[in-house]
Length: 160
Image 1 (tube, rainbow, N blue to C red):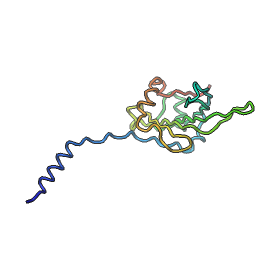
Image 2 (image 1 turned 180 degrees about the vertical axis):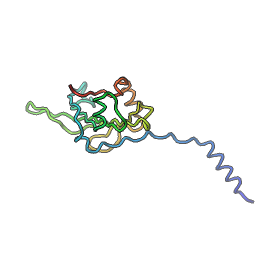
Image 3 (image 1 turned 90 degrees about the horizontal axis):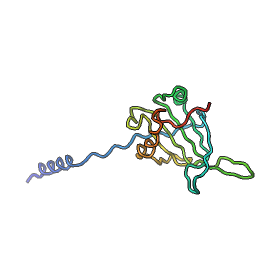
Image 4 (image 1 turned 45 degrees about the vertical axis):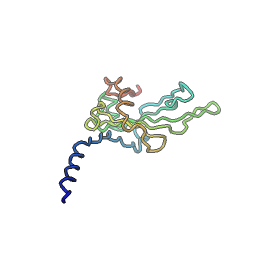
């Protein structure tokens, strides 16, 4: 008795009923060397609570294409903006940068990130390359950045 046709038919039926896995969002690469890019601005954010994760010193950097975007109001594909968040330490009346808390990255690629205004988003933990946001970017990042749609989804601007 030949079971081959039954096995093949079973495999075909199983493959037709299986759903294709959901494709993961394209990855945003870690911005190597970003501290040598154009420094856009810095700010100090006081904590709103003892556990406020966004409190600290914020530095914003832009690669050459993003700098052009800041100047023209339109960020071309290839633009990368980095939000570098550092903890704050204070001693003897001096406030200093502490350890890095996170590195947030916006990467403009209208083909890969068309569903999120052309921008890909990622957050890296501390001084590591550990991704925090991953596939939640359309919800966690883009949803907030839609407030700045008229500014190509970018909150920061060049300092006058």
